[in-house]
Image 1 (spheres, rainbow, N blue to C red):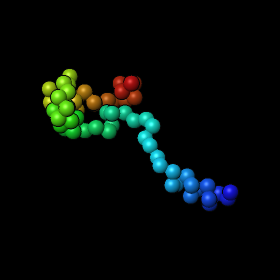
Image 2: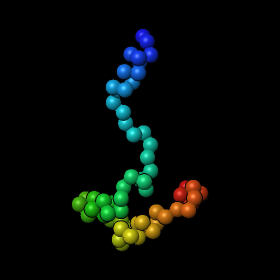
Image 3: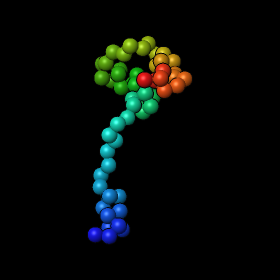
Length: 63
């Protein structure tokens, strides 16, 4: 099998996200909307409270 065929196969295989951080993928407004819709309590009172909690100055603070 030549490299062009392999490339074609790889490009057409379905892909999936294997790892992500919720802090970088879910906006606070959407978080509150989904929580309300699904009757889920949150440890924050407002989307702004979430934004403040998601403020990191460096990797160590994030971890």
